[in-house]
Length: 151
Image: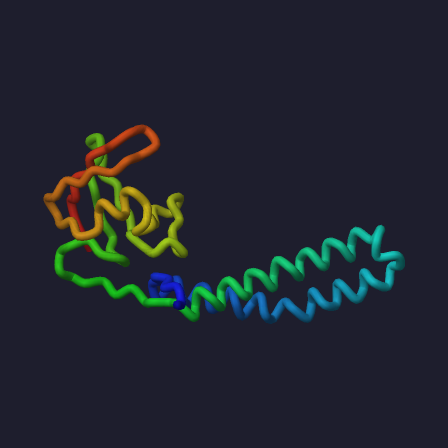
């Protein structure tokens, strides 16, 4: 059974762009390997080893992206007032407001306030609406988050 990966339209487009760039880089990597081979003994050739490692990483990432895109399910925001995948949510915690976008695990980037639906906070927010209070386990213990706004 194929795994489902929840992606926004932008996230899918970003992965498609990365995939194209990686596929386009294959010939340059092959040229690096060929050039390094010309430098003699492969067992002591650090350029050859580095080029082969780069090729391995590139091919692994290509396979990973292809798997994700094959199982991609595009997130469509509901507009029903309840938090769902793809929604931007403003919460109040500790007297401060914070805004997060709830996305699938592939697109999660906590530094950009994009939290996974599988994270404790993301899971707690799913289904909540403005005015609700949810609890989520954090590294510093359980915290309460009041949902201020759902976009």
